[in-house]
Image (cartoon, rainbow, N blue to C red):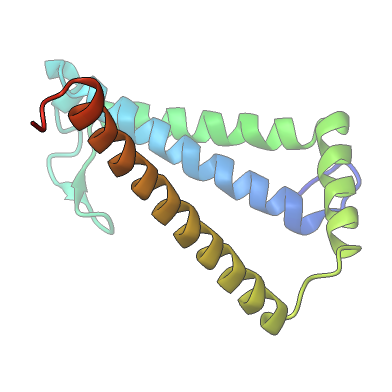
Length: 144
């Protein structure tokens, strides 16, 4: 799939490529809907829908598909550029060196985070209510 350093960084480059293809599909879809505002892009070319897609073949559909294919090709070219490919290959190599925590360690760390967040929320809420009461009753004298 990739010409430059093929066989290296397969997961990182594949993930980046398919993410960009998904973004290209979204761009082609948005272009298709944008092109629907003109009459020429809504004209059915075949007279019947495309057999598998059950969708009419219109110039707007063809333009949207062209945009999707063009952006997908540009993504492939981008990921074969030496600097970007080297970055993704090196990223995957470094991620293989990472020591991931066990499920038990992750669970304990999550409990600590949740407890700390709950303590901070309680402290900030109490401070907010206390300052509100202080300013309302003492500073402005509204509580008398």
